[in-house]
Length: 244
Ligand code: NDP
Image 1 (tube, helix red, strand yellow):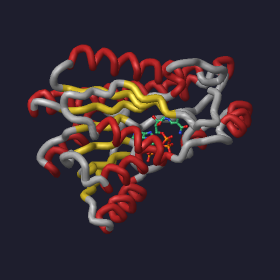
Image 2 (spheres, rainbow, N blue to C red):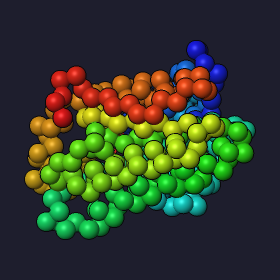
Image 3 (tube, rainbow, N blue to C red):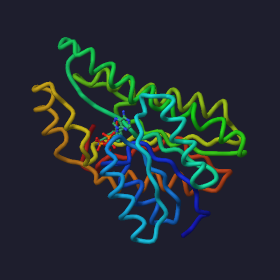
């Protein structure tokens, strides 16, 4: 292990990037505290990590509920004594054209992708200030840099994640580090939530070239492994063969 082990709370750890991040950080010796709604998945992952000699625990988490996120972060602190980093990773992507007026899906993206990140910040920031330091790793997307049809609301949420992260960074210089990791297409369950038939079909070819989730986990681990005086602010990681 290269750096001092940390306590890292990961939201959305039941699949895809969050799951790969939990594995990767635990393998490096960090203590991971995992949250998502599918606790069967979290329990299996926790068993796998501890069986391999790592330190992991989990708690059911719905990031749309501010009190639940507060309890999640408190539970991580109670378990391990501190919280060095929060990976605000939980996200949903039910794409559709605006004309389809899937307003409930718009709300869900805003609730999970934007409010969820804000809830993570609100839960952990006071704790990190009191500890004298901490690190937020917020997962945005290449959709935080450019917009495409059917992705207007999703991209808006990811632009918001970048804006919030930059504001937090500016207000926190000195003790809190802030990293935005923006993946391109990555193997995960994210596209399974697309109900709109045309958007779903279009995604099949778009998502044909994808990174393994472990590649994004590597980027997160890199940012977390930097010495205290180094703040890695943005990482964009795409499949080499991808033009988007
Ligand atoms: P997955 O669908 O595989 O994982 C999403 C995770 O978010 C799951 O663990 C899910 O857990 C969790 N989640 C969803 N809603 C909630 C909620 N209300 N409360 C708590 N957890 C929730 O997709 P990815 O791994 O790809 O997504 C991770 C992040 O990466 C997202 O922010 C996504 O936008 C971003 N991203 C992904 C890209 C890709 O191509 N895969 C590209 C760019 C960005 P559960 O359902 O058990 O609650």
